[in-house]
Every structure is written in structure tokens, then in C-alpha cells.
Length: 379
Image 1 (tube, helix red, strand yellow):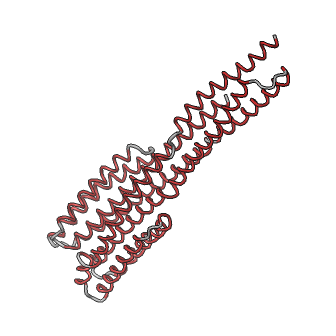
Image 2 (cartoon, rainbow, N blue to C red):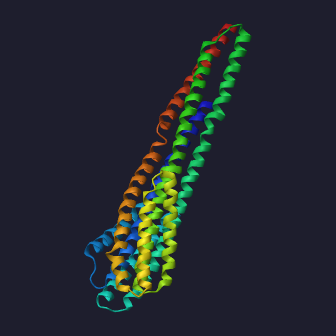
Image 3 (tube, rainbow, N blue to C red):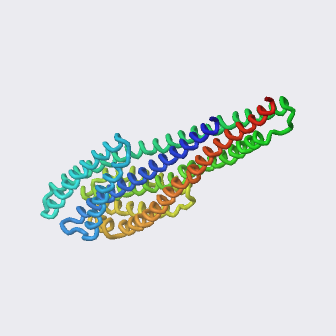
């Protein structure tokens, strides 16, 4: 029974690590939805700033991103817990309203009606609400990953809590048989003890390795992917605020929002730099921040047209595009690495569970044979 208890423990650890893997992949998927949403919102504000003539390529990207957000909400909503699914459903409903507001803003903007800005602000506020909902879901999924790792850690103790007492019983029983029946060695009992010890050493090592791999994946690649997504989302929010500031024509107070988003992005990139050792994105985002400062300086000095040009097609636009491209590649790479690391962490545990079960049967049979031999002699 002791070895069978270890089998149950290994199975529970395998299951818990699998659930942690699923939650981590859902976390990455929700982050992707958030990044695409703020990207779409950033493009909507940028195209509004352009006036009646939008950038066609940007408009196409906006539509692609919004469609990806809608599809992503449905896909993830089908795989998460009910409370999280309800929050995603609420975001999905808000997305429809957001899209309608953006279209109203575009229509009024093309005709030169100032009311378009009001529609745009309402849409932006709604986007902020949707992002807050997505962050709540992400927080829930992070907790699920951690809870599953804790559960896997606890489940792994079953092998040791049941296996070592069994080994002690086998050794004690073997000693008693040797003393009682004047036999130096009972081969079946000795083999049973040897098998049990081997299983404890090898099984314990495999369990420990699986747990270590999962914790390393969570603390390195998954955390780095998480930070990359946070940085991209905050950077797009900052870029959107840059456009909003210019739409408001010199209302420098709005730059407070840019500063907050930029600080979030910079902090996430700095932490990612520590984990991965690659600090390229820190410098890339810093270049955009410097270009943004130049945009604000021009606008504050009364050169709104120059600030607008720099933001839409000049140095600020070029610097942000470089950050977008580099951070997109980094986020995709880190996300794939995290998914692979979490998925492979439990490799071997399913086989170990079967081996433990079969070994438990073998140990039980050997014990019966060993004691049976001595009992026959006694009779």
C-alpha cells in the first residue's frame, strides 16, 4: 500500500504540473489579447490625429488586431475557470461597443466635426476598462500557476512519506525472519527492499527534477514572457497617450499619463533585462522616450505641426516602430520558450507512475513469497 500511495502522489504531481502548464499558456494568451487591444487603440488614436486621410496600412493593422482580440477572447474564455470566463465575456461585450465608438469618431473626423474627439475619448476610456478586466484575469491565472506548483510540491511528498516507512518495514521484517528462522538472507525480501530503495532514489530524483524544471520555467522564461507582454502593453498605452496629447492640441497635462505608462514599460524591461541578460529593448525604448521628449518640446513651444509630424512619421514614429518590431520578436520568442519549458517539466512522471504501480505489485508478491518460504519451513 505504501508504494501505491507513492503512485497516487506522483499522479497528483503530474496532474498539478499539467494544470500549471495550462494556466501559464492561458496567461500568455490573455496577455496577447491585451497587447493587441492596446495596439489597436494606439492605431485608432494615431489615425485620428492624421485627420480625414488615414494611413491605409495602419487601418488594416487595426482591423486585424481587433479581430484577433475578439477571437482570442472566445478561445481563452472556453479554457479558463468560470469567474475568469465571465470577466472575458464582459470584455468581449465592451469590445463591440468600443468598435462602434471608434467608427463614430472616424466618421465625424473625416467630416471635420469636433464631436469626433468626444467619441474617441469615450472609446479610449472603454479600452482602459477592458484592459483592467484583462489584468484581473491575468492576476487570477498567475495565482493558479502558483497554486498548482504548490500543490505539485505537496503531492510529491507522498512517495517519501509512504516509501521510506515501507523500506524500514521490509528491512525490519527481513531481520526478524533471519533471527527467527536462523537464515542469513531471505532473497525475496531482500529483492523487495532493493526494489523499494531503487524506486525511492530514482523516483525521488525524477520528481525533484520535474519540480525544479517547473519552478525554473516559472521564475525565468514565463516571468520574462510576462514582463515582455507588460512592457509592450504599457508602451502602446504611452504611444496612444502621445497621440491623445497632440489631438488635444498642446494640453501638456495629458503627458502625465504618458509618463506613467512609460515608467511601467521601462520598469518591466529593466526586470526582463535582469532575467534574460539581454538589455537591448531597454535602449530601444529609451530612444523612443527621447524622441517623445522632442515631440513634447515642439508642442510646448507652439510648433504643433512639427510635433504632429514627428509623432506620425518622424523620429518618434521611427523610434517607436523599431521598439515595436524588436519587442514583438522578443515576446514571441520568450512566450514559445516559456510554453515549451512548462510543457516539458512533467515529462517522465506518467511513466514513473506506471512503474511505481507495477513495482508495488512486485514488492507485494515478493513479500508474500519471502514470508511464505519461512512459514512452510515452520510448519
